[in-house]
Image (cartoon, rainbow, N blue to C red):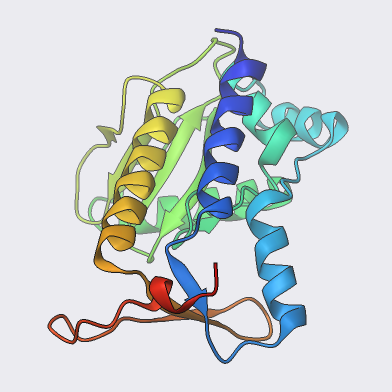
Length: 210
């Protein structure tokens, strides 16, 4: 499958989940509801010029699938990777500096490869990167605080994203089966989930007019 088709399929799956949410909005004004719904389905990518500039700094070329992800949805990927901090392309160097500071707390001699693009940080204790090696699709690597070396997240970036989407789909299905939950959206995009007590028998999804 071509890189473009792979990323298009990710977007299709994200839209399908957004169109069948496992939650009901609660205590959220209509304008914030509309903004939130839009953020789930209106994917925004980086320009070719922005990507090329980042590659110049790395002295390499992003793998084709990761590059297509950046083009189609890298700036705003919907729910994908929600809960983690994603780098804007102009922040790659800043993310790299933070990543190397983290691993050097374990061993001052540790360093990342020159063509490592750190694109994701999770809660400050681990980060994920890809190598700008010009391949079609390479293994994303994750480094966790206090580790002496990175671990392979998946065989390819496509596999990593597919696994993430599958987990999201499974979680949504489980929430649907249990009756869903309430979701409050706050100005600025922050959200809060409100789940009924396990034995209450309350099913928020059943309270929505069909």
